[in-house]
Amino acid sequence: MASTHDQSDATPIGQLLDWGTRLLASSSASPRLDAEVLMADLVCWPRSTVMAFPGRTLPQGMTDEFRGLIRRRGEGTPLAHLTGRREFYSLDLRVSADTLVPRPETELLVDQLLERVTLIEAVSILDLGTGSGAIALAIKRQRPDARVVAVDWSAAALSVAIDNGNRLKIQVEWLLSDWFEALEGRLFDFIVANPPYVERGDPRLVSGDLRHEPRMALDGGVDGLDSIREIIAGAPRVLAPGGTLLLEHGYDQAPAVARSFRALGFRRIETYKDLAGQDRTTVGTVP
View 1 (cartoon, one colour):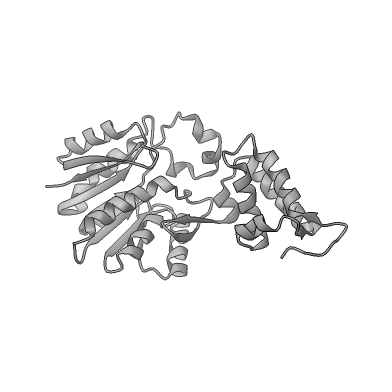
View 2 (cartoon, rainbow, N blue to C red; view 1 turned 45 degrees about the vertical axis):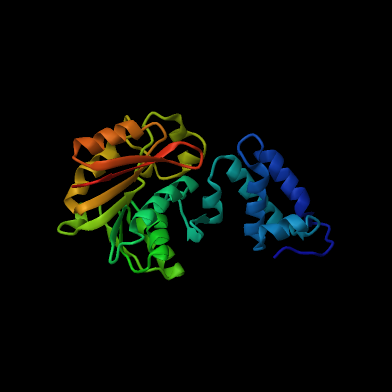
């Protein structure tokens, strides 16, 4: 914990926050917030306390640690990877370099699913490519009576998801599976997925925060739609009659996603916008 004593080798928190904000000004959209979050995590205080007591000091060792965190953030390491945590749908989730950092726009996927299951009893839901387990855990927290199964091809990512479920005491069935591979003979009322959908040539894959996240969870092939097409093609085999597939996708991919839905016989195809007004989730139902 930070020292409150007047020591010659101690540095005021406010001074460190000002330094961190300046260093991050050219690389972060929220430099002050990033600096405050990193400081709060380092000293194990609420961010409000960090902001309210800028005169409190850190000893030299913690000062050096904070400066190191700021430099890594400036180099593009995601904030969530530096703190090891990210909030999603009011859940405090652990994340790692093996998982995508859950993003606010993905909460739309959870919202759309929960709207559809409100009046359905004994509903079964499959989360494809679960990563940190964010979607599956958010759904199960809201609908504890639902049967929720979550799969991922990465054992390392699945380990993070299992840990999150254990910490939060939320019971989800976790399976190691490349999409539908381990699900032969099983049927679900709903499938949700936030698959890789970034175009392979997109410069964001080699710059900014995305270059620090798992490439296989982002790279959707030349046009960004490889995984989306694979999921749409395979979903009818594991959807119960009248079952629904909900997919997150890129802001400009909705028309192509809807065409793929129609080509596979899906009906009642609808696209929904995220809070930024971008097309983000497309939904279709099998006969």
